[in-house]
Length: 118
Image (cartoon, rainbow, N blue to C red; front, top):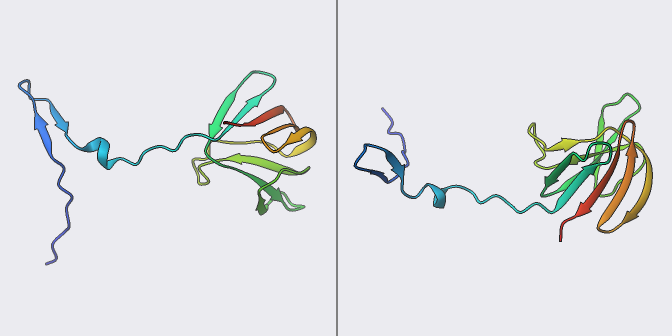
């Protein structure tokens, strides 16, 4: 029979019987500071993420590749890059303005501004 490795977490029980995990904060990963802010023009919807990527689609609408720069036909996806991503746009139909720390672009159904947070 194998023994399971168990993590022991120190707890404190106060006079009312409430239990507190003494070192929970030290054990939890620190959230990263967002570096990007996306604003949708029509309603002001705002999303933030640590990283962004630009998704290229094939002619059938299936994932083709990711890129570090926007282009017509690509979609923006905001981290984390898993099933729980922050936001994904429809494909870009036009780029209005682009700098290293800013881009204003149109998609099939919205206009967005993406800012690098300083």
